[in-house]
Image (tube, rainbow, N blue to C red; front, side, top):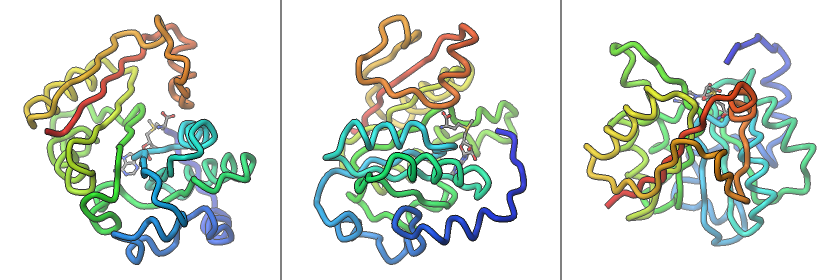
Amino acid sequence: MRLRHKPWAEEFLQAHPEIVISNPESLKGKWDTEFSNTNPLHIEVGTGKGQFVVGMAKQNPHINYIGIESYDSVIVSALENALEAQPLPNLRLLKVNGVHLENYFAKNDVDRVYLNFSDPWPKIRHAKRRLTHEGFLKIYESVLVDQEEIHFKTDNRGLFEYSLTSMSAYGMLIKDVSLDLHANMPEDNIMTEYEEKFSAKGQPIYRVEAKFL
Ligand code: SAM
């Protein structure tokens, strides 16, 4: 994703504490208090401009969603999308790096992790940055309820193959694999920005659901 410096971004994010969480450490183990309910919590790591997480929150009002994105200049677009979709009491955004999830979520806080069109980091020396690297799987497992799942979509065949290998080497159950999601588009599929872009170019979309055992 091309990053443009947006000097106004920090102030804009701070102006919307009802959506952008400013004190995530203090909510570790008590996200129910933030949402004022005990509904399941699903997070998307690498939410980008937020089309997926906003769409999911609209579609599933009884699930709480948090979109996590490390860049101010990107998450501001997710905030704009979220503001347009208001009221959406089951959606929050978090501007942090996913590598630090354990600072903000306790074991059993999270019921599902979504990864969509994650950066492929094709060079071997950058493998640890891939969001399906063993190091990240360990982090997700440490915040998820036992036996819960990661749902992953990508257009990148290399990253997809790597991710299947990484998840299965970790001991996860590979439940549901699609090599062309749009050939049999699930009715409830919410497209991400990247999904729209790549599928418009005719690229197949790969998807997997994988469960921690
Ligand atoms: N999920 C969106 C979509 O499908 O349209 C965005 C995809 S974009 C290729 C990947 C996004 O993940 C970027 O916005 C990037 O900043 C974010 N990202 C990558 N690594 C991350 C990390 N460790 N923590 C949080 N966000 C991350």
